[in-house]
Image: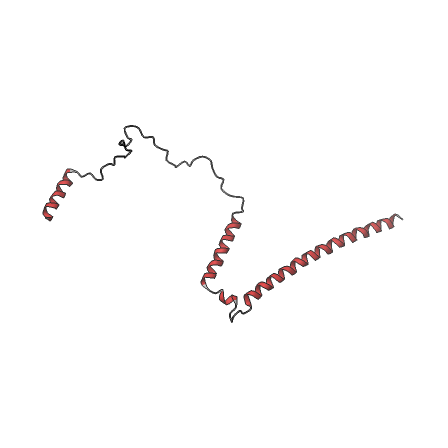
Amino acid sequence: MLREQRRRQGKKRDGKFARQLRACFLRCMKWLLGLMLFFAFAMAVLLLPIQGRTLWSRGAVREVARFVAHGLRSGWDAIASLSKDHAQPTHAPPAHSPKRKVQTAATAPRTSREGIVQQPPKETLQPRDQAALQDLIAHSR
């Protein structure tokens, strides 16, 4: 009697497992069929001629190749950005950044009442260069 009960329990377990296996198999087959239909549709779009030329032959244009390369590159960048080894941002200023200089009253530029800052002279000539310039101007006239 005990053996019969164990056999019945075993059959129940096998039946439950078989139903789960069958359900999983059907789900996987549905996905496989769906993927096959998707790729068949994609191949039909690429290889069936429309107005005498297939989309595959029309895709031989240089621009399409450039767009595809750009899409693949940006897709790869998106996947690469998912990695966990990103550089951590720092909250301290960089060590090489120049510190702001405080201007004293002696080095501060002079301003007029209207707020116009006096500009330094554009060029300073030494007396020797000044004499050479004057000589050059005299000879050119």
